[in-house]
Every structure is written in structure tokens, then in C-alpha cells.
Image (cartoon, rainbow, N blue to C red):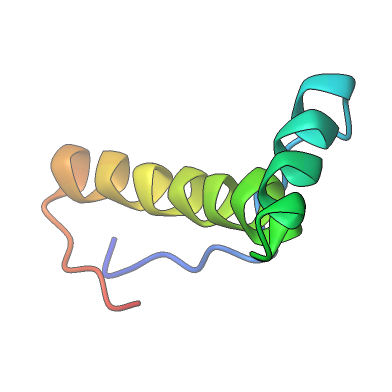
Length: 62
């Protein structure tokens, strides 16, 4: 195996807890969607890539 491609974003499910986080950050003038859904989704994709890198010794380019 020479490499992998992760297609799509690992977006979290829309649930009450995430909506509360979104509302909290939006009330402070920040991008609530990014904090509740965007950043956790990107983190999930990066963790999946790390798993493959560890298992197969691949180099990951983001």
C-alpha cells in the first residue's frame, strides 16, 4: 500500500449537545458551527489518517 485517500468529512451527528455548544460559541460572537461540528469533524479525519500511518508506515499529507 502506497497511500490512502480520505473522502468526505467525518461530521458529527446533529444532536442537542452539539447544538448547545454551537449556541454557546455563537453567543460569544464566534463561529459556533465550526466549534461544534467543523473542528471535531476534521479531528476525526486526522485521527483516521494517523491510524493508517501507524499501521502501515505511510506518510500523510493534509
